[in-house]
Length: 213
Length: 208
Image (cartoon, rainbow over all chains, first blue to last red; front, side, top):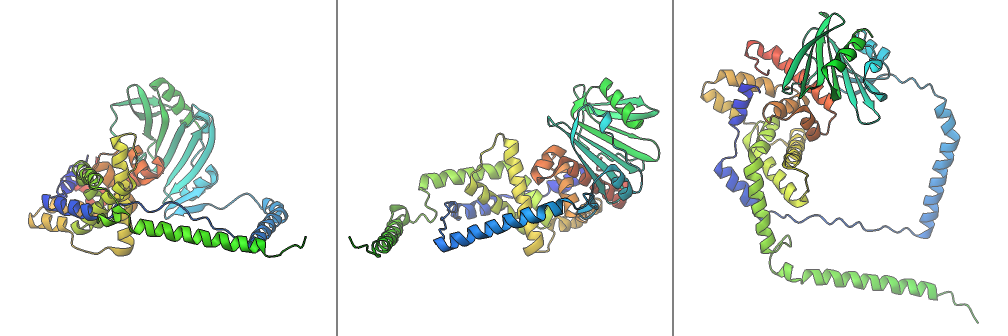
């Protein structure tokens, strides 16, 4: 934990005066819950007919316009979901967005993927998230430089080095199950996190496949 | 037999009048109920009110500092943070949520405090005084002031992840639960927050 920040935040405390003030205010506050029962709205029959007609019109428009909408090209441009974060449609699109190749590593994963998301962060970090049918997940990241790009700074009890495909990766985990691998090839840093984790032997095979992909 | 066009209309009028009378009766009964006469504005008996006050004290003792700190990390002044602490506890007591464990309870409080604080940043931040900065300056702790200013300058989305990780000791999974975000997004924000702090703090960087 960052010592300086802990020391700074340690100075922000509830003083006895503040405690008394807040509890006094709460003891006088109205703590009753807002009524939750909704009042049913009843339309006169003429309005019911109008509402029914509106619904039918919407269905009619959907039936007529639906096929045309479906014929539109399915390839959508990358979408910026929030400043600096861009959702892409494929590994190729992601590679274009970040300016360096980011390969799909689904074939190297220990589960069958059912959903894949491609995200570019500030145009300098490429991320591919995979989800499996039984809730498994994997996040693969690549960025220029040699710094740890995983964003996973949790304290792990076990950290071991494994060499695979000419690079040495740090495996991090607890109790023989490793959930994160971080490595660099000198030009780029990489990370792969898995949930659930895997043992060291399985990771060697996974990393071999990822590095050769 | 001659068909009469009015009975259906009359029945409808009668039915509406009866409904109106019933509503008036209910409202009148509520106005003269014993609870209203006892002067309990929120309808709680003295015993249940006492139980709520004890619950507030318990929450304050267990989570008060954490809630105050997260509010301060967003708002940078004690008075606003104190109001957020109070509003958070009131929301808890009003909604009385049920939890699987104390960690979920704490996560709920931190999430609500964070949301209330963010609303204040956007719309009605009241005060500008940063007592923490003044305290550090008066003690000539430039080393800490430097770190605090660097954290304050982070965009909110990075700062909240940094605060929860370093000040509250939350894991990235817990932060994701508190912020209602994907864990991968939290990791990205934590990573970007740390790299920005590294750029600013240089040798003083100690967010290991």
